[in-house]
Length: 317
Length: 295
Image (cartoon, rainbow over all chains, first blue to last red; front, side):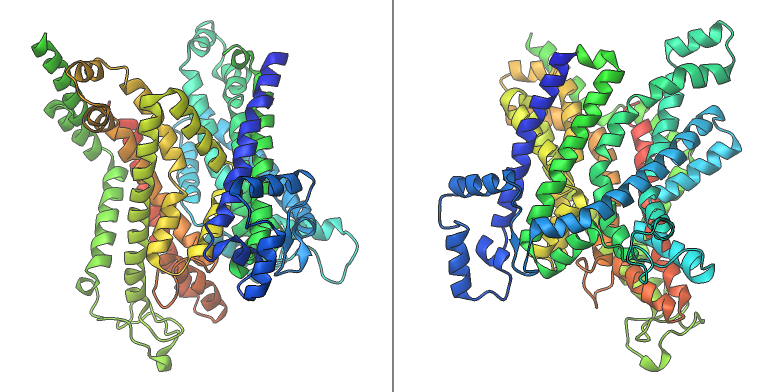
């Protein structure tokens, strides 16, 4: 057990280093070179020469990387010359909002997708199963922002149940839970739609597959009712690989947050990333990419460790 | 000895292209799945309509006619007009050209890279495999849309740049799938036979390994086209995809959002349905192929 944990933790170190090398190189393919990219389009030749010297872009590539990685380890994510602020501060303002949004979407997805998939498998090929499968298939193929727009048109403009966008009502400065939740409802639903579709499909598929396994056949052969076989035996085995899916959904949620935050004017990481791309604020893009990639690697690590703890077969591979 | 090796090699090409009987069974199953037939028909019809649009409408192009902006659907403009009085039906068909072009070519770029990396990784194994798959792991750690936005910020402007940017960010999962397939194929006897007959690695890969992975490659390509089309929509919505005045389904749909507030609610429907139907059809074909190819 301990050796599995240690091995898996060590295994993620090369990936982490690779992530920093990749993002470091991204900035070097920017047109005009890294100093131009970090200084912004309006930087004068003198400023660029200054930046090149200060940030060490006139030194060998390996040395540059070492300098940059060292700063990163000490929590220095660079400085945005366009926003005139340290990237760390910009991220610190936005990250909690996005984590809240992602958490809400994750919760919503689990609460909807698992029961839906399980019930579809339980009533396999029934009218309900077929209808749900069709809707899930459409949701899976739909542009996210279209779904968000429909939600706004329906629930904000026509029915006036939820606010159109933002974080919370403007006239309140203090943290206001009811207002926060009202503002979170539609963005979280929009962000959740893809994972609800993907996960319910996955759960249904893996339960139907497990039902064909020997142990399920045996359980049925000894006279247990379908319901018991399904919920007592099959569900547990179908849910275990789902842990890995949860881990790998983190990058999808970050991608989705860019679109969702744009639709609902939600001030999170996604919106900051989009704004930085439009402004060509590479310093901020670089800092956010590194941080998200590290979060993703750690998320996958956590999922794999949980998988190893729940399913003993993994540890002895 | 020589002849038996030749026979083994024949097995490779039979497995890759299928027997006549196998092909007949494949088409019979296809024709017995109405949704699969409808999906393929939809892709064919929408592609033809977009490519040769004067066949399906008497409108001959896009003309600005501000006096008739936001006109509701009539016999003359069957989907109405947009804010500049341009015929919406022609805009949707011309937009389809761009969206389908981006979808198909970006998927092609992704599959060429993905197949190359996956085949080399699976075939050679060892250090090469470890390094290539580590690179894939690393790239998968960066959210796709972040990578897309990052690259689009650097290179956006032309449709070609968009295709390349979507293509080079979409080959990761295909490369893993192809690698998995190649891992089993390279253990087959016909690969041994080809090697015994003195074929070099490149020839074995091109003649025996990749053709036998064709099922996986074609299935994945179908999903990749759907994904690339959704990526185009997302980037156009975010304002760094296809630029106006060139229409695409993505930018038609995102500009339709403001048209709704101008009272032209019907403009949100055509481009949205065009994307929804096309992507659904592609995903359905992909699903069907995954279950039926190589059976």
